[in-house]
Length: 221
Image (tube, rainbow, N blue to C red; front, side, top):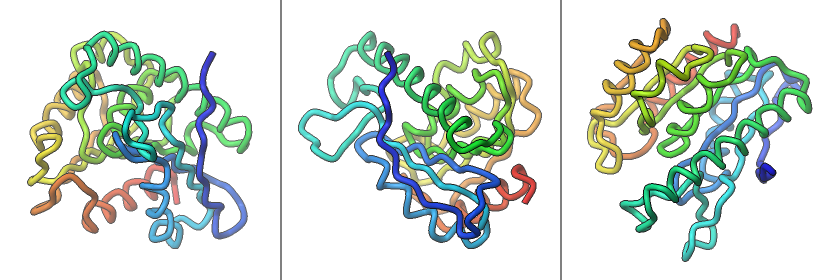
């Protein structure tokens, strides 16, 4: 049985939903971490509903922190526990997206996944394995999980924007070209990249501007 994800939402400024952006937060954060980005984005995406679900698992010792799956080198979990947690979270996130399409009466081509760090890992894993192609995936400061499996498991190939800070000491910036190479090898035609100069593990204004332009283009706005 899948777990229902507690979700924050910011309604479209126009009052009419023509597109949806789903924020997918990183390890140790929660839905509150990214929903604030809706404010600067909404002005340029007035018909967009912004959703920011909490990851399904609490992190021991971090009352407000959530995780999509355990990370062995951070929490001491085993590779098996991490893999099991990831696959369970994949089921949860797919169920969330399935319900979103029905509840908000939108099609996949009206939905963008906007991930950060572990949320990027989730977005890049789930999006290409969904039957119906999403409008796009914005992938900040993360990496592509199991790149060697992608070519065999890919089902759809949505446009992807990879964004990373060149001073990231959490997820190395080298993860960007590695992800781009694996995506292109798996047949993805629309793979874009932007490196945020002087930026650590975060989202800089220039990265957000590039992400906004990408979303407006792929949502046809």
